[in-house]
Figure 1: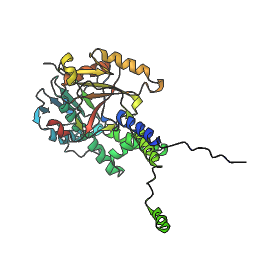
Figure 2: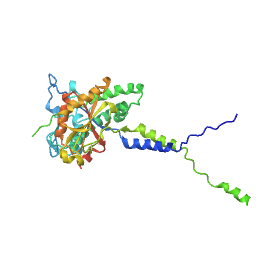
Figure 3: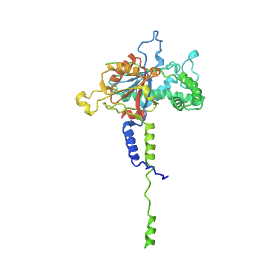
Figure 4: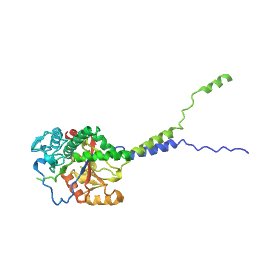
Length: 203
Length: 160
């Protein structure tokens, strides 16, 4: 029996085909995943009995149409906002029921009682530039994150930002997630993010 | 003479390109796995502001995008230079935002309809008035989870 050799398929153009596909994907895709500041809007229906908030527990930040910052009725630079917010949130002037055992502020009676009561109110003008607004938002979120970080460092000796990144990461195992969720919840209860965005005043 | 010709077989063999397809396929798979498809053409300027306290967005199918900014160069003749909202592939009015969100939400799977995030991709030169209007519309349709999409960088870069 004569053995007939099967002719080989020429694979020379395979590379060309693969290149074509590669270039197609290079052109139609974007490599970066989006990231940004997560915020929660207040529901449109106001709660039935709005709680009474004392003026000293509100930290007002106003951004005007010239992108200037007015923090607690004082003109301020962007770089000082973070520290001012930390001082306010961490003040802990409350006594008795409102006392804050973990606060390290200077307990100024004119400032907030405890982080749970402290509210930051951010107001903007219709002509404020978006980038300024985001910069201020970023500083305020940074203030919260810094306090949370300090708390977790002291109590659990871990970094809050790392912990949070781990919680969002889909690759984190379920057992690890079970471990860190109560920790995160505790931190969020200690320093809740109470950042209200009022509707802008039109002039 | 015959002796000399025989020696000539020692020349360099051509480099084999048989593994080239494998290499290219490897690249291809790399790009296929790390990238995401572009879904809409931008019709507005979209230079995002900077922030450093940022969180990564959820999976892509749980996000609804809203773009805003000045119309790009080629649309400026017809639409002017005032900031506009872009939904999907066309310019839209503030009033259409609510319906757009509802329509997009209806398209998603039942179990993720409650966990949707609205990503606001807004150009940094935009005035807050427009964004407040969008936020107001979002509140009306109860789309309360939002994300101001930003580039990563120091916040002070925004002021330059």
